[in-house]
Amino acid sequence: MNAAVIIPLVLFLVIIFAVGFIASRSLTKSGSDFMQDYYLGGRQLGGFILAMTMIATYGSASSFIGGPGVAYTEGLGWVLLAMAQVVSGYFVLMILGKKFAIMARRYNAVTLTDFLKGRYQSKWVVITAAFSIIIFLFSAMAAQWVGGARLIESLTGLSYTSALFIFAVSVLIYVVIGGFKAVALTDMIQGVVMVGGTLILLIATIIAGGGISNIMADLTAENPNLITPFGAEGSLTPSYVSSFWILVGVAVVGLPQVTVRAMSYKSSRAMHRALIIGTFVVGFIMLNMHLIGVFARPILPGIEVGDTVMPLIALEVLPPWVAGIVLAAPMAAIMSTVDSLLLLVSSSVVKDIYVNYVKPDATYQRVKRMSFGVTAVLGILVFLMALNPPDLLIWLNLFAFGGLEATFIWPVVMGLYWKTGNKYGALSSMVVGIGSYIVIDVFYTSLFGLHSVVFPVVLSFIAYVVVSLATKHLVVKEAGDMAAES
Amino acid sequence: MPPQEDYRFKIANREALIGVGLAVINFVWWFAFAYGLGSRPPEEYSYVFGVPSWFFYSCIVGFILIAALVTFVVKVFFVEVPLDDEEEGDRS
Image (cartoon, rainbow over all chains, first blue to last red; front, top):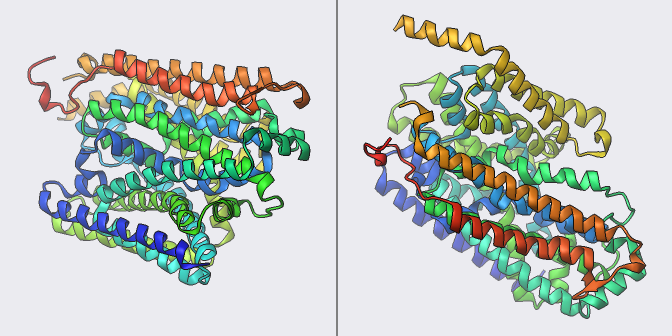
């Protein structure tokens, strides 16, 4: 691979570093509440940064690298499916909305687990939540590292191990030093890169393909199914495609890496701006990116590995230095996912487990050292796992998003809007959600032609409501006991 | 202060319902055009700006429409409130 591609990529990484350092300077200056600053950026995000960091977090590697690859294979039907993500651009912030931000402040919550702790006052809810975050997000993160290293490997020709090393060092430095603010700021840069990158690449691809009508004619000639909503083999049924509205659309409300952003904004004005910007940008990126995958097919037929569609088409239709900048986009996507996950897992370990149950009287200095230390140690652990990824890891990762959604969606949403909901309901909802998801995913893969996330989301809702109602008297009694004791 | 008395929660509840409504509109539009126009055999497709009409209306127009709707409801129906409890002062 030539220097013209590598130089813009390296420049991009340098800019990211610079932002991390600047953000870390402001971290030491303010210093009023280290936890809030490090893990939440002191709840000071403006609208534009908020929108970009949310998109960069949930829209990332799966859609950026994997998505165009599948679109290449399946045709326009996969673009239709991807457009289900537009709903996440406004749904999350509208549903969690101001109430979540207000309650998070009232509970002084820094993580999703803090919120659950404040709402349900239950040790078991907290521990279940913290462990599912640590296990699932750790696996999701390790798999992203593998993806990031493979991308560097394919662009630079370095060995997998050295590519992984470069990736790990660049992620670790700015996450450990800069915290959430650095992550949010770099997410913003990465979001802008993604928007610009996909637009340039889409236009160049259309030109290289001889115009849209020409591309459509080529696709029809190859396989008419490519321009139907049903996929290349006709296997994308309406019910299956629609169930992605839950997986990548509305149930994103339950993802811890998304909810933590919904408590980080400065004001309701910032949230309003983020709603508008977020919807436009997420739709724009999804549409462009997946169309690139479809349009690449007549230009570069016969690509075997889906993940290589983006890099190959960029190198084909763009001059090398532009390709370098555009390819910084998937790089950006992976990095922004990884950094936010790393921070989240670290906060779960330090805040949810250590400060809550191991050493509640930890001093400020100690918590600060722990936060840096745990983040760094986690990064090294992920690096070691990514060197030689075990099979279990791949499986857990595939599983992570649906699993987290089924675990958290109702304890969060019903916790906000239904007063009767209680800790027993929340705990059974989490257990039923995760349990039924494992059973359905392992034994049935897709029940009634729907994605395996659909039924667990329904079942965990039923569990939440039924158990909360059934234990209503218990909670009233406990509250009475507590009042009597004090 | 019991949570149910907070005036901000009424606003928040209404905005959450608007979110649900928008998602329903979005889904119906997306589904109706995609499978309404796209279920014909491909040779009978009509094309708008080079892409099949089902795709144009469902994905492109649908996206622009929903983005415009979001902008509209946020500007018109969403209310700015303070997020910190202490900023409320003695209003309750």
